[in-house]
Image (cartoon, rainbow, N blue to C red):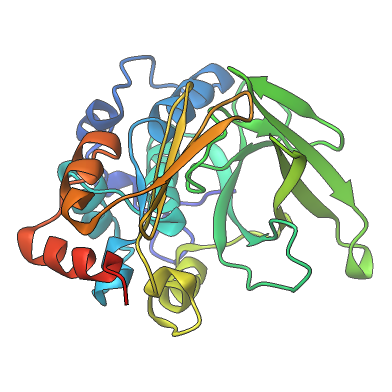
Length: 285
């Protein structure tokens, strides 16, 4: 679980502008390490700060030091991808006194190929509850609240349904799978183990995600905004809106629409020079 100090295990909670972070996510509740607070924090975080990979697409560095992450996700009108979200959320958990550890997951999405383990997660044990809870705040499509890490657990958050599964892994190491219910039934989102991860591990994974030529995040814009009633996703020029009942709508946007769609639907505001580059990426080849 989380440890303070300068040995690389800590999450810089002492350097977090906690008041600014809580204001950014609209949280006004208690500041204690309880399950109720954890649930409220995750719901506030995932419905307030969007998912986006703009810097990776633009070829700009994606630094994970807390000050840079705060500038973008808290003080700026921007979002981030999983590593940025988890670094920020972990610093808040540490500041509030939660016991937790970072984890790493492997996105699956029914893909038969083994994909790199590049999804950041957090396992939390609140002070008033003996169970271990999964906080997946950086996937872009919820869940709204933590999910107990226990085989067979199914949850329904305002119509959004998820399921946890344990499978026997190599050398007796448990594999945990998170599934999400969609229009076509249960979809496996990612698999993970309970091996602790630290900020330096995320820095390595983030470098691959934000710079490697085979990373999908360097090739096209990908943004998401999630709430209790809908999930907006912009994948290149394709804008899809999903709803808890599994229904969805989809349309293509024109480059000239990008600024408005990002600002109004995803709450993301980019600089003019960045907007020009992103618009060019949406133009037909």
